Image 1 (cartoon, rainbow, N blue to C red):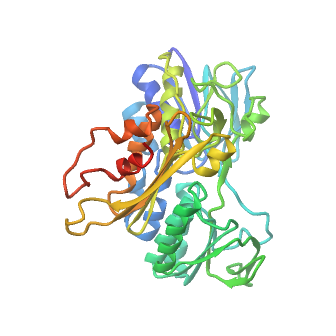
Image 2 (tube, rainbow, N blue to C red; image 1 turned 45 degrees about the horizontal axis):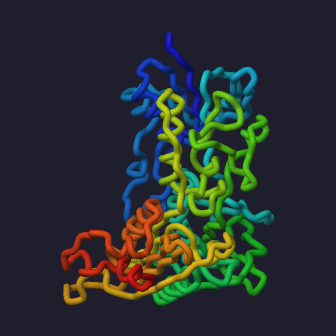
Image 3 (cartoon, rainbow, N blue to C red; image 1 turned 90 degrees about the vertical axis):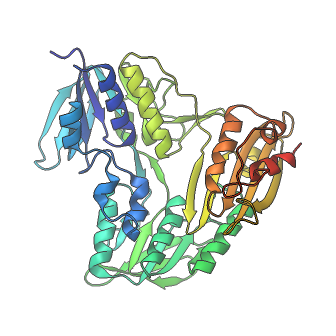
Length: 449
């Protein structure tokens, strides 16, 4: 008989990270994962590159399928199974088989909620028309790919100028579509400051993306066969064959809320540093759960794959009896549009103002490696420091090859509570093909000494 019975709701990053950690610690515990979609442990972040053809198979986005988990890890991952109710008092969950529509109760000793996030979907009559997609699961990415293969759309509309919107704009350009990106804000990539976002807008416009900023989607129209053929905003109307909704996500926490589990103001599940919820023997991890922001000193909702995987590791460790605490997040993120790499960490100027933190900034332009080396490119670095303590509190980078991952140096400086002087004096590596003798990040730091 197993010593303990574990149930995990959700079979992607957080859920499977936790399951794998528990299995490494306890070989004889019974671990069951319920996942409502057809897939487990996949890279949702890779979907734009699969759709564009850079990744030639959706299977390559799957780290481990249910068969692998069963045969190699003795973890039972049941796809097409949705948990529709939790009874914390009796420590049981009601599971619906989505293929048979039959439901049954299953008991647990320890439960992890890793239900992820739901994409925002406008409340419009034709939002479910053929050719209108939200990219959230691997299956949704496959659906987009198959729609494009079959229907050969010529005009694509992307609603939302965040990470997904930028990545999908690149993907659809590569498929020779006419791409229009809409955003209700006056600039895209709102986690960056406007002076950095402007450079991204310029690059996208040069590449052929039509940017329609400060426009709100009001109507989706379809033809007599149910295929999308037009969208309207509060400013104009546009013919289209394909619509990608990239309007952000919200925590999928309703199941937890209905079970009496406390939520944060952001509607994410309230957890402590051990990923424990307000109910005993129930943990939460991933996009459905809150994360403590190290600089804002509040719990926030930040949906990133890196965070979800760490959440899963910490939750799994504590569920297995090995104490571990999650320190918190900075919102470090990176993406690219064609040859332009885009990254950010910590606080933007807007966030520093909202947090009432007096700050200073420095923005520099340099080369991503030695200027005399063939194919060197440009890099723009922005640093933000606390005006009183001189600690680094934020950074943003835009540039050519090799620029983006420099954000990790800034994130490390923030985590280490380093000052601008500390960062400028860090012993960083240098060789002409890969860097400049003064790294661009350190050049920016020197401006703040």
